[in-house]
Structure formats: structure tokens, C-alpha cells
Image: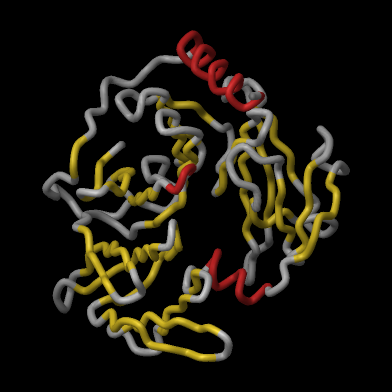
Length: 299
């Protein structure tokens, strides 16, 4: 009930306090007009998506977010004041953004931003990463905020103070599996990617100590993300279309053997699980929803 009230409020506030973009007409994937990839921190590039409902969708673009309340017909731009690489909305309707960088040769960095008024105003907090380094948002949309620290311990925010109101919850059981699944995206549950030979990746299944090769992904050169959603495995990455050119790759694997590839243009794609099992794909060409008949462009 609380989260439904938030949805009604967010619509009213945005309509009263911000300017809508012109209508962004949705349609199926258009013919390519460019395959140029945008810089990683260019705010025109989508780097995350949060769907609150079928109609309310929020996309992250680094130091800005865009939101639709009408199933992608129009979008509103909201600044987040600082660059972030993760975004979520908690059970109270608070927007939380996280930037984390675990440096090897460079210094590590971490900060968070929050908005309690649907993006009108933002508060920022820089962490002393030597004492507490939030590295990854663990909570899903509509849940109390949880983060994983750089030591793989999970903490829940139990008060308003980002410096001291963190309560230990649990620890990630298998840090290596977590990294492979959530950071490098070579794992998805029991499924693994063998990239020892490129091109010529293999899809493996590891169960009870047994390793089975399910599929040969003969032309795939790299995997950007893979995820199991409603018993179907989704794989995103790059393939070589010829000796000098790469193109984005997105495919579904059902019944562990049946592979269906979808046509996609632009840069390296990512796949994301939405509310109610929706499947989102995004890259520098836009945001797409996987449907029964193909990919529907939302943005």
C-alpha cells in the first residue's frame, strides 16, 4: 500500500514540477543509422534501468535519470547532481544512487546520492572508504536499501544517517561466484560461459560437480551480461560480423538447448531483470523490452 501511494505521488510531483520531453514514439527496432559507441560517462548512454511498474520506468544515464509514467510515450529528465553507476528506489519511494570504483592503480572512490522528493532535490554523501565502502546495491525495487561492502558483507540502512545507520545483515557466501555473476557476468546460476577460445565461446551448465556443454556460441566474442528470468537464460554481448567489425548480440536460451537470437544495433548491450519478470535490454541505441514477438523500443 505504501509503495502504491508513492507511485501516485510521484506522478503528481513530476507533472507539476518538471517539463516533459516531446513525445518519444515507441516502435520495433529501426534500421541502423550509426553504430558509433558513446563514451562510458556520456549521459546519453543508458547504463541502468529500474521499472516500478509496467507504466513507470526509470533509466539511469550517469549524472541524470529519465522517467516515464505512461509506458514510454513521454519522458522527464531529472538531474542526480553527481555521477552514479547504480540506482534503486526503496520501499518508501526514496531514490538511491551509488557510485563505486574499486581502484587497482587508481584510488578507490565511493559515494551515494538520495532524493526523498522524487528527484527534485538530491543529497550526497562521500564515504571514508577505509572504514566503510559500499560497493554494490543488493536490494531490488520496493525493498529497504541494502548494499554489499567491498569485503562482501551486506548491510541494511536502518536510519537516515549514511555514516552510522548501517546494520550488518549477512555475508555473501561465495564471493568469487558473486563477482563472476554480477560484475563479470560469466555466471548465471548454474550456467557458465567458457571464453577460453575467442571466438567460439561455450555455454556450460555446472551442477553437482558435473560440467555439461549445452551450446557452442561459435561467433560470439564477448559476453556483457547474462541472466535467468522465468526459467529462460538471456545472453548479451558482441559477435564478429566480419573480420573487422563487431555488432551487438542478444539471445534467449530455453530448455537449455533452444537458442533464439534477436536483431539489435549499436554498442555493447546489457540485459536487466525488471519487476514481474520483464526483460530489458539497453545500449547506446536505447532501451528495449523483450516481447513475445521481438524487441520493442521504449526510449
